[in-house]
Length: 288
Image 1 (cartoon, rainbow, N blue to C red):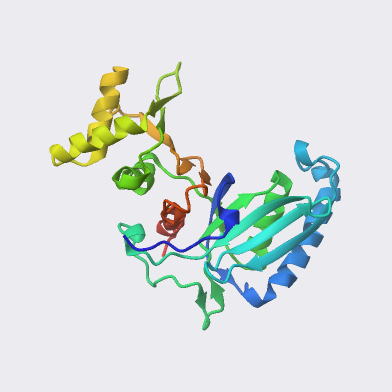
Image 2 (image 1 turned 180 degrees about the vertical axis):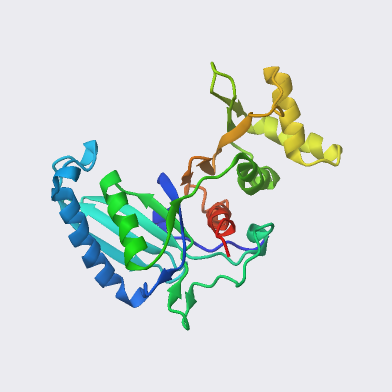
């Protein structure tokens, strides 16, 4: 498996909302200080307007200090830090560059061109994934700034059940070093009463299930599903029964477009693959 890029600390240990970005026209990395100043002005105007007097309960009464934009030279990630009260509280808006990992992009829609971070001839910059951890009022300002200032489209990234399984769950189950903690799967139901339920599978059980799957020359997921059906007495193949959230020691991803990647395992376990697959999910949904 190709080595995933090393991403900056801001990517990890924080819950983010996922957005898909089309190429930005005239974004210009050398203009990051200008973007930061423009956003600072716009956010301040928004926070002082009557429509956005309260940013969020936790930030009520706090004054915006500034919006600072920086780029990580190793990963290419652009980080907008929104600071309140003189920088004591920081929120992040991260623009992540495309991945070139063929495995991550396998099965994606046909595209007329390969993605690179910069197309000099057309002045487009490619950051297909936007991670947002900012108050709601700032989210509105930030996404509006990107779409109007750079002629781009920004949409919430939703991950269907099939993609949750193929993009995150199946690769996780195949990685031998990561089945130490429990795995939690949340299912949605079509019934009127119980809408969702969560099943927790201990790491030891996962290892045994995978060994059993190997003995049967099968992938892990079908054996795991049969195990869950026996444990719950439910058929997980019925129409309307879908996986809507996957949580483990490495990451939490929900179909509603929320993600948290845990960086505490970075020294012993490669977690960059999770970030790459989230980027891939954004790229695979981009129309040619």
